[in-house]
Length: 308
Image 1: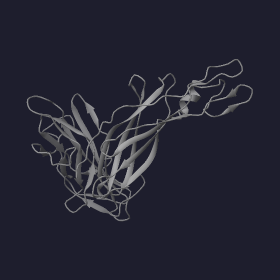
Image 2 (image 1 turned 90 degrees about the vertical axis):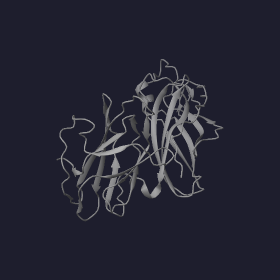
Image 3 (image 1 turned 90 degrees about the horizontal axis):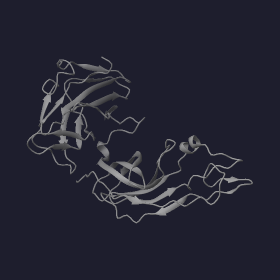
Image 4 (image 1 turned 180 degrees about the vertical axis):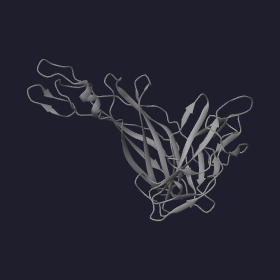
Protein backbone atom coordinates (compact mmCIF):
# COMPACT_ATOMS: atom_id res chain seq x y z
CA UNK A 1 0.00 0.00 0.00
CA UNK A 2 1.26 3.55 -0.56
CA UNK A 3 3.37 5.37 1.95
CA UNK A 4 4.20 8.94 1.30
CA UNK A 5 6.48 11.56 2.74
CA UNK A 6 4.13 14.49 2.93
CA UNK A 7 4.65 18.21 3.00
CA UNK A 8 1.54 19.99 4.22
CA UNK A 9 0.92 23.67 3.56
CA UNK A 10 1.92 26.09 6.28
CA UNK A 11 -0.94 26.57 8.70
CA UNK A 12 -1.15 30.15 9.91
CA UNK A 13 -2.42 30.89 13.40
CA UNK A 14 -2.71 34.24 15.16
CA UNK A 15 -1.79 34.94 18.76
CA UNK A 16 -4.03 36.73 21.24
CA UNK A 17 -2.35 39.86 22.63
CA UNK A 18 -1.71 40.04 26.34
CA UNK A 19 -4.31 42.18 28.10
CA UNK A 20 -2.34 42.76 31.29
CA UNK A 21 1.34 42.99 32.21
CA UNK A 22 3.39 41.62 35.06
CA UNK A 23 3.01 37.84 34.81
CA UNK A 24 5.35 35.07 33.69
CA UNK A 25 2.84 32.39 32.69
CA UNK A 26 -0.21 32.59 30.46
CA UNK A 27 -3.42 32.39 32.45
CA UNK A 28 -1.74 32.96 35.84
CA UNK A 29 -2.99 35.78 37.97
CA UNK A 30 -0.65 38.36 39.54
CA UNK A 31 -2.12 40.19 42.47
CA UNK A 32 -2.02 43.94 42.09
CA UNK A 33 -0.98 43.96 38.42
CA UNK A 34 -4.02 42.43 36.67
CA UNK A 35 -4.69 39.07 35.03
CA UNK A 36 -2.97 37.70 31.94
CA UNK A 37 -5.00 36.64 28.93
CA UNK A 38 -5.41 32.87 28.45
CA UNK A 39 -3.64 31.06 25.61
CA UNK A 40 -5.15 31.54 22.16
CA UNK A 41 -6.49 28.40 20.47
CA UNK A 42 -7.07 28.78 16.75
CA UNK A 43 -8.97 26.20 14.71
CA UNK A 44 -7.24 25.19 11.48
CA UNK A 45 -9.27 24.30 8.40
CA UNK A 46 -6.81 21.90 6.79
CA UNK A 47 -7.87 19.15 4.37
CA UNK A 48 -4.76 17.21 5.28
CA UNK A 49 -2.56 15.00 3.17
CA UNK A 50 -1.55 11.36 3.51
CA UNK A 51 -3.94 10.99 6.43
CA UNK A 52 -2.32 13.54 8.77
CA UNK A 53 -3.61 17.04 9.46
CA UNK A 54 -3.29 19.74 12.10
CA UNK A 55 -6.67 20.79 13.44
CA UNK A 56 -5.73 23.59 15.86
CA UNK A 57 -2.81 25.57 17.22
CA UNK A 58 -2.65 26.93 20.77
CA UNK A 59 -0.32 29.88 21.40
CA UNK A 60 0.50 31.72 24.63
CA UNK A 61 -0.21 35.44 24.94
CA UNK A 62 2.44 37.81 23.70
CA UNK A 63 5.29 38.27 26.18
CA UNK A 64 4.37 40.88 28.79
CA UNK A 65 6.41 44.02 29.24
CA UNK A 66 8.42 44.23 32.47
CA UNK A 67 7.20 46.59 35.20
CA UNK A 68 9.01 48.12 38.14
CA UNK A 69 7.42 45.68 40.54
CA UNK A 70 7.89 42.52 38.46
CA UNK A 71 10.42 41.75 35.71
CA UNK A 72 9.99 38.93 33.20
CA UNK A 73 12.68 36.28 32.90
CA UNK A 74 13.36 35.31 29.27
CA UNK A 75 14.92 32.06 30.46
CA UNK A 76 11.77 31.21 32.39
CA UNK A 77 9.57 31.88 29.37
CA UNK A 78 11.82 29.72 27.19
CA UNK A 79 11.34 26.71 29.47
CA UNK A 80 7.59 26.51 28.94
CA UNK A 81 6.63 27.82 25.52
CA UNK A 82 3.02 26.57 25.89
CA UNK A 83 2.78 26.15 22.10
CA UNK A 84 0.66 23.11 21.27
CA UNK A 85 -0.55 21.72 17.94
CA UNK A 86 -3.50 19.34 17.91
CA UNK A 87 -3.55 16.80 15.09
CA UNK A 88 -5.45 13.85 13.67
CA UNK A 89 -4.13 10.76 11.92
CA UNK A 90 -6.53 8.79 9.73
CA UNK A 91 -5.54 5.40 8.34
CA UNK A 92 -7.16 5.13 4.92
CA UNK A 93 -5.47 1.82 4.16
CA UNK A 94 -6.35 -1.82 4.75
CA UNK A 95 -3.81 -2.75 7.45
CA UNK A 96 -2.74 -1.31 10.78
CA UNK A 97 0.03 1.28 10.43
CA UNK A 98 2.56 3.01 12.65
CA UNK A 99 3.23 6.63 11.71
CA UNK A 100 6.30 8.79 12.31
CA UNK A 101 5.42 12.47 11.93
CA UNK A 102 7.74 15.49 11.99
CA UNK A 103 5.99 18.72 12.97
CA UNK A 104 7.65 22.09 12.50
CA UNK A 105 6.73 25.27 14.38
CA UNK A 106 7.43 28.50 12.50
CA UNK A 107 7.58 32.26 12.89
CA UNK A 108 5.45 34.62 10.81
CA UNK A 109 8.09 34.71 8.04
CA UNK A 110 8.09 30.91 7.72
CA UNK A 111 11.37 30.30 9.53
CA UNK A 112 11.50 27.04 11.48
CA UNK A 113 11.80 27.64 15.23
CA UNK A 114 11.44 24.04 16.43
CA UNK A 115 10.89 20.54 15.03
CA UNK A 116 9.27 17.73 16.98
CA UNK A 117 8.86 14.08 15.96
CA UNK A 118 5.89 12.04 17.13
CA UNK A 119 5.25 8.32 16.68
CA UNK A 120 1.63 7.19 16.46
CA UNK A 121 1.45 3.42 16.75
CA UNK A 122 -1.01 0.76 15.64
CA UNK A 123 -3.62 2.90 13.88
CA UNK A 124 -6.23 0.41 12.70
CA UNK A 125 -7.64 0.56 9.14
CA UNK A 126 -10.35 3.19 8.80
CA UNK A 127 -9.66 4.62 12.27
CA UNK A 128 -8.75 8.18 13.28
CA UNK A 129 -6.44 8.93 16.19
CA UNK A 130 -6.08 12.37 17.77
CA UNK A 131 -3.13 13.76 19.66
CA UNK A 132 -1.14 16.85 20.57
CA UNK A 133 2.49 17.85 20.14
CA UNK A 134 4.29 20.64 21.99
CA UNK A 135 6.93 22.88 20.48
CA UNK A 136 8.93 22.49 23.69
CA UNK A 137 11.52 24.86 25.10
CA UNK A 138 12.61 27.70 22.82
CA UNK A 139 15.87 29.60 23.38
CA UNK A 140 15.60 33.18 24.65
CA UNK A 141 15.25 35.62 21.77
CA UNK A 142 13.55 33.12 19.46
CA UNK A 143 11.06 34.88 17.15
CA UNK A 144 7.45 34.36 18.11
CA UNK A 145 5.88 31.17 16.75
CA UNK A 146 2.68 31.80 14.81
CA UNK A 147 2.39 28.78 12.48
CA UNK A 148 2.82 25.04 12.37
CA UNK A 149 2.84 22.41 9.65
CA UNK A 150 3.44 18.72 9.09
CA UNK A 151 6.94 18.55 7.66
CA UNK A 152 7.25 14.81 7.02
CA UNK A 153 5.17 11.64 7.33
CA UNK A 154 6.41 8.08 7.06
CA UNK A 155 4.35 5.01 7.86
CA UNK A 156 5.05 1.30 8.02
CA UNK A 157 2.95 -1.77 8.72
CA UNK A 158 2.44 -1.92 12.48
CA UNK A 159 3.87 -5.41 12.64
CA UNK A 160 7.11 -4.25 10.98
CA UNK A 161 7.66 -1.05 12.96
CA UNK A 162 10.73 -0.85 15.22
CA UNK A 163 9.76 -1.58 18.81
CA UNK A 164 8.91 1.35 21.07
CA UNK A 165 11.67 2.43 23.47
CA UNK A 166 11.77 0.10 26.45
CA UNK A 167 9.63 -2.53 24.74
CA UNK A 168 10.80 -5.96 23.56
CA UNK A 169 9.14 -7.84 20.66
CA UNK A 170 7.95 -11.39 21.17
CA UNK A 171 11.02 -12.57 19.24
CA UNK A 172 13.28 -11.11 21.92
CA UNK A 173 15.25 -9.27 19.20
CA UNK A 174 14.91 -5.54 18.66
CA UNK A 175 16.14 -4.03 15.35
CA UNK A 176 16.47 -0.28 14.77
CA UNK A 177 18.43 2.32 12.78
CA UNK A 178 20.20 5.38 14.11
CA UNK A 179 20.16 8.88 12.61
CA UNK A 180 23.42 8.33 10.79
CA UNK A 181 26.46 10.45 10.04
CA UNK A 182 27.47 12.42 6.96
CA UNK A 183 30.77 13.95 5.90
CA UNK A 184 31.97 15.12 2.47
CA UNK A 185 29.23 13.23 0.66
CA UNK A 186 29.84 9.98 2.55
CA UNK A 187 26.83 8.65 4.45
CA UNK A 188 26.78 6.01 7.20
CA UNK A 189 23.68 4.75 9.02
CA UNK A 190 24.01 2.20 11.79
CA UNK A 191 21.71 -0.80 12.17
CA UNK A 192 21.34 -2.05 15.73
CA UNK A 193 20.26 -5.51 16.87
CA UNK A 194 19.55 -5.81 20.61
CA UNK A 195 18.93 -9.08 22.42
CA UNK A 196 16.18 -7.89 24.77
CA UNK A 197 14.91 -11.42 25.43
CA UNK A 198 15.82 -14.05 27.98
CA UNK A 199 17.83 -16.44 25.80
CA UNK A 200 21.10 -16.21 23.88
CA UNK A 201 20.80 -15.26 20.20
CA UNK A 202 23.30 -16.26 17.52
CA UNK A 203 23.78 -14.54 14.19
CA UNK A 204 26.31 -14.58 11.36
CA UNK A 205 26.58 -12.73 8.07
CA UNK A 206 25.03 -9.58 6.69
CA UNK A 207 21.64 -7.99 7.32
CA UNK A 208 19.20 -8.88 4.54
CA UNK A 209 17.85 -5.71 2.93
CA UNK A 210 14.94 -4.73 0.69
CA UNK A 211 14.95 -1.14 -0.59
CA UNK A 212 11.60 0.65 -1.01
CA UNK A 213 10.63 4.10 -2.25
CA UNK A 214 8.06 6.43 -0.68
CA UNK A 215 5.28 4.53 -2.47
CA UNK A 216 6.39 1.22 -0.92
CA UNK A 217 7.69 0.00 -4.28
CA UNK A 218 10.96 -1.91 -4.70
CA UNK A 219 13.80 0.34 -5.81
CA UNK A 220 15.52 -0.96 -8.93
CA UNK A 221 19.00 -0.23 -10.21
CA UNK A 222 20.84 -0.32 -6.86
CA UNK A 223 23.52 -2.93 -6.18
CA UNK A 224 23.89 -3.94 -2.52
CA UNK A 225 27.56 -4.60 -1.83
CA UNK A 226 28.87 -6.74 1.00
CA UNK A 227 31.33 -4.53 2.86
CA UNK A 228 32.18 -0.83 2.56
CA UNK A 229 35.32 -1.15 0.40
CA UNK A 230 33.37 -0.54 -2.80
CA UNK A 231 32.18 2.78 -1.38
CA UNK A 232 35.06 4.10 0.73
CA UNK A 233 38.31 3.10 2.41
CA UNK A 234 37.63 5.50 5.27
CA UNK A 235 35.99 2.85 7.45
CA UNK A 236 38.99 0.57 7.37
CA UNK A 237 39.44 -2.77 5.61
CA UNK A 238 36.44 -5.02 5.17
CA UNK A 239 36.23 -7.89 7.63
CA UNK A 240 34.58 -11.22 6.81
CA UNK A 241 31.43 -12.23 8.68
CA UNK A 242 32.00 -14.05 11.94
CA UNK A 243 29.60 -15.89 14.26
CA UNK A 244 28.16 -13.56 16.89
CA UNK A 245 26.52 -14.87 20.06
CA UNK A 246 24.52 -12.32 22.03
CA UNK A 247 23.63 -12.95 25.64
CA UNK A 248 20.50 -11.20 26.95
CA UNK A 249 21.24 -7.49 27.08
CA UNK A 250 24.01 -7.60 24.45
CA UNK A 251 23.87 -5.95 21.01
CA UNK A 252 25.27 -6.22 17.51
CA UNK A 253 25.72 -3.53 14.87
CA UNK A 254 26.08 -3.26 11.10
CA UNK A 255 26.43 -0.22 8.84
CA UNK A 256 24.77 1.01 5.68
CA UNK A 257 27.34 3.00 3.68
CA UNK A 258 26.87 5.10 0.53
CA UNK A 259 27.76 8.31 -1.26
CA UNK A 260 25.21 10.81 -2.50
CA UNK A 261 27.23 11.79 -5.58
CA UNK A 262 25.05 13.07 -8.43
CA UNK A 263 26.37 12.89 -11.99
CA UNK A 264 24.46 11.83 -15.09
CA UNK A 265 21.12 10.12 -14.63
CA UNK A 266 18.29 10.39 -12.14
CA UNK A 267 19.12 10.48 -8.41
CA UNK A 268 17.73 7.57 -6.40
CA UNK A 269 16.14 8.07 -2.99
CA UNK A 270 15.22 5.17 -0.72
CA UNK A 271 12.69 6.07 1.96
CA UNK A 272 12.31 2.65 3.58
CA UNK A 273 14.66 -0.27 4.19
CA UNK A 274 13.10 -3.57 5.20
CA UNK A 275 15.67 -5.37 7.36
CA UNK A 276 15.90 -9.04 8.32
CA UNK A 277 18.56 -9.86 10.87
CA UNK A 278 18.98 -13.24 9.15
CA UNK A 279 17.09 -15.45 6.75
CA UNK A 280 14.64 -16.70 9.37
CA UNK A 281 13.95 -13.42 11.15
CA UNK A 282 10.80 -11.32 10.91
CA UNK A 283 11.25 -8.08 8.90
CA UNK A 284 11.59 -4.68 10.52
CA UNK A 285 11.11 -1.60 8.34
CA UNK A 286 13.26 1.44 9.15
CA UNK A 287 13.21 4.86 7.48
CA UNK A 288 16.80 6.07 6.97
CA UNK A 289 16.00 8.10 3.80
CA UNK A 290 18.97 7.00 1.71
CA UNK A 291 19.95 9.68 -0.82
CA UNK A 292 21.99 7.45 -3.12
CA UNK A 293 22.51 10.05 -5.82
CA UNK A 294 23.34 8.41 -9.13
CA UNK A 295 25.93 6.00 -7.70
CA UNK A 296 23.67 2.92 -7.82
CA UNK A 297 25.51 1.37 -4.88
CA UNK A 298 24.84 0.70 -1.20
CA UNK A 299 27.32 -1.06 1.04
CA UNK A 300 26.36 -3.13 4.07
CA UNK A 301 28.84 -4.42 6.64
CA UNK A 302 28.45 -7.72 8.52
CA UNK A 303 26.96 -7.95 12.00
CA UNK A 304 29.50 -7.65 14.79
CA UNK A 305 29.13 -7.48 18.53
CA UNK A 306 28.74 -3.91 19.74
CA UNK A 307 31.86 -2.48 21.34
CA UNK A 308 34.27 -4.61 19.32
